[in-house]
Picture 1: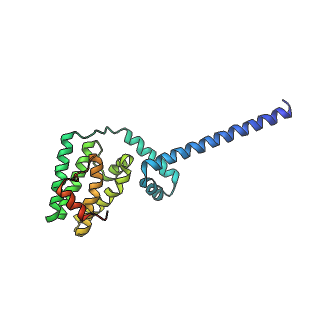
Picture 2: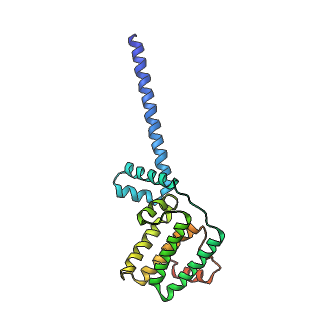
Picture 3: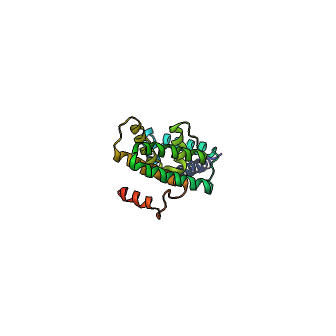
Length: 198
């Protein structure tokens, strides 16, 4: 093999390696953009927690894999009607008993999560599974849960409890695939008056 042939082979090998590196880079960027779009604020939170973008992306890909193994079911119309009525009851309860209303809201959201097919035995596992399709409202659920835990210790103010109900409603409505208090309802007008700064 002549020196010219060797030089050509080296140039070709370098080009092939460069093309492969570019393909890997573009593939990684596409995957990163897809994860950022799917997980939204959850992507940034996991990156910050893990301290590494690569570790965060591995975690999110694993969440997608586990989520794909779930058997999720849409709500039947009668279930949606029942949950809507239950939510209105919780909201009405808040006026006289905000602590009980928050506890009921937490229980109602957990029931809805379970009925949709998500595991509910472990709160952290719940968050992992919910993050795949409900990342944009997951922050609301976390905030509501924290206030609910503080309420159980007697450490939540009425304003915090009100915020917890608003936070629960965000995920509840998304899982319900409908506003739990339709705009024509008097209860909806009342809540909107109290929660306009959302």
